[in-house]
Length: 255
Image (cartoon, rainbow, N blue to C red; front, side):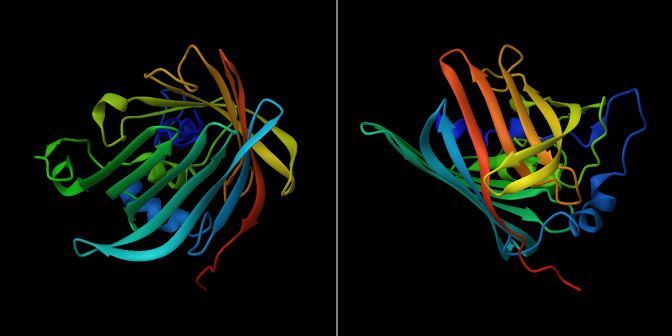
């Protein structure tokens, strides 16, 4: 249940709907745009609640810069831990994505939820639009692919206008496309980390879950150059799963 917070549906498209002109292509602008959105060492921590119950903590860390197959890449680490007396969760996700284009290069997940365990390791090849699970043959991907984690950082580089809908087909596993983001409104919101001006978006994806068309979820993003995620509220058939920002460390920005 808690790992649904990491699905790619939190993220938006690079292409605007037909109601407005498209933004600059990511390959031309991503490197410039992200400089005001995030920096190495940035850490976001969250309180995860199921209804009124505290069920865990989440962390998003932009750990720094690595090299993947000779390409300079951001390394982003997501963790969620917690659970109840009889059900424990420890999930971790690591994404390496190109510092210039934000295209995904490698994506690793370790999921431990109760008795369910899963380990996934994907190599992603933007130059030939393919990906491969560890020790498996390559299969078709998409142009300029994004994974669950790099999607979150990519969205933070996209200008969001109230009343617009954003659609894209960049998730590295093609069956996960399209992902659509509706920009609903602006509002002032208070979370444990403070009070912020926010942009509220509603994500929809084609698969089942909290972001499907049958579900209802809203995500609050900071209405500033960071677009960091402040809060998430999701209405599910079995209850409400919410996430609140508790602390924020901006990292070290280059001059």
